[in-house]
Length: 225
Image 1 (tube, rainbow, N blue to C red):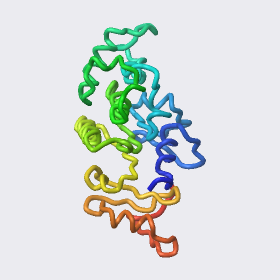
Image 2: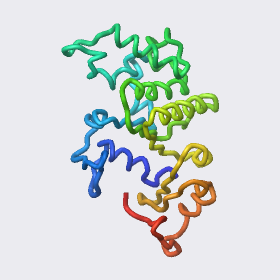
Image 3: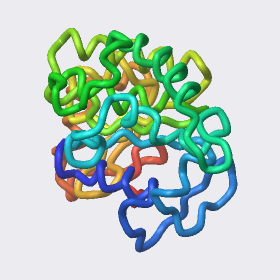
Image 4: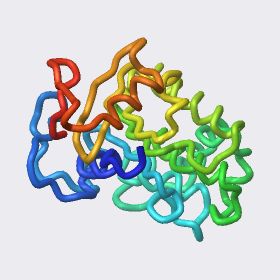
């Protein structure tokens, strides 16, 4: 549910929120002092829920918004100088995957519809090798057709052996997308659900149960993230 602490959790993992306690591990290695400038190196990409404020530079073209996370790669820059030709070729192949016609990638993002704006940060995650994609509310504010395209992209990402962490308050979509689900309540993990247990009644039961009635088990133990 919105306000349960799920967004703050993923922001902390990505270095956008301060961490008071707890440990982040990447491939078994402890990540010390995470910052927004460092996660792309080990292959962690974050797609914020507020695309307009946090995920886009509205006055710049689609091309620049998509390529900005890959400018440090040798295919895009050489000795600190942007290679426009290689940048355009890379972006042209990417924008077609989400049905943005290649000629449109010089349009400014502010001129796009809400659904197409949503696609631009997703395309950004395709510009380099990513091991874990963190999607925060990726389908909020877009129509059914655009949602389908986002879901298809997620399936493509998983097919490449990357993992997805999905933060969503759209409860009906969860059973169709997730292999495992953590229910959060009051900024704590309230339950871990797997397989057939990922359904609306089960999620709501854990979310709304009172502390006095909640009996944690080894599988569904309320614990700090």
